Length: 470
Picture (cartoon, helix red, strand yellow):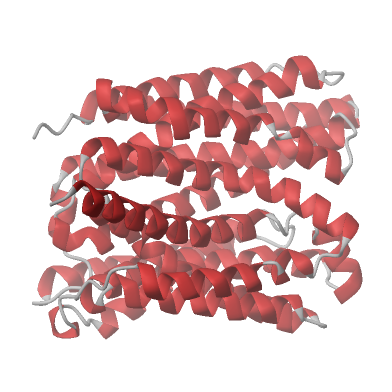
């Protein structure tokens, strides 16, 4: 093969990678870009405080509930078809959200965005692995993915503040339309067609209903715990129903000939443990971001735009590590060692900010912490994803990709709900100490809980993960 052909092939793969990451960035951004705009949306469309949560929750429930199913369908009918369908639906749903004149249309549009995001996102990791099978190339590609996944949320906060205060919240959605249309046109031309296994090899309709219902109800149970109307009895009943649905799904998968989720995939310890680490990492990361934004606003007194800009150190350091330094270190030392190092750095950042006082300074208590956190997750996330994906067979790439994305979304939902609830309850119990002191104590408790998540991930990584030698 001539040098020119090799170079052209590399360029083609690079362009295909850009298309995949544009879609992933839109998905991540849409998870947080709306956060800063929520008060404005509430005033314009007449949402109640409880109803406003559904602008976020309808997206999250559809996204997390369908990821596993979408990944398996990608294996069966081809990942390119699923990606194109997801990208098209996400773009159309963004237009619906941007044009929404009442709250019901906005919630429906957000749900459809979640469906489209799940379809596309579920197969992205598998497509990256197929595009870049060599360890060095794959490490660099996963570094870009890590930056997209980890920094997209912070970038979303910044963009949300800018867009809302300049051209209006509708454009937080409408901006996806031209980007999505262009990405769709390039995706049709650049992404290689990969024939699937065929629907006969795993079209388990009942299993799909059970797992989607179980995951969706589970995520709903998690996110509604932070609502004032939540009761312990209702939460326990919903959790029990979710567990029962998922248990029925597991029993069915163990008995049928062509399961939707081949349980053999969990026999690979590396894949299972790495996905647990991903859950813990994203629980700490998203919960940290949520509580830190509240600390900056409610305790330090920043407005929404300044709060978004305050998060800049995190994506900047994440970009430096995940796009430049981490890939080279991963090739040299291996993903397991890099995962442990990144987790330890993130743990130190959480312990640092947990000591932030009521009269804290951004320069001392927040900015440096965000920089250290960005560096830590810029190393840890791509390493964890590489370990999870390398533990799966090529024929299960879509399933493993969907499983890993499910782990990310479940972690984000669990972390945000648990840390938000812990912060609110701690603040309520210490209300007699003064409002600002009580708020700070609540966020401090949440940061220590996040540190507990990361410490558990460190223990699992040291004790149960091993390098895969080829």
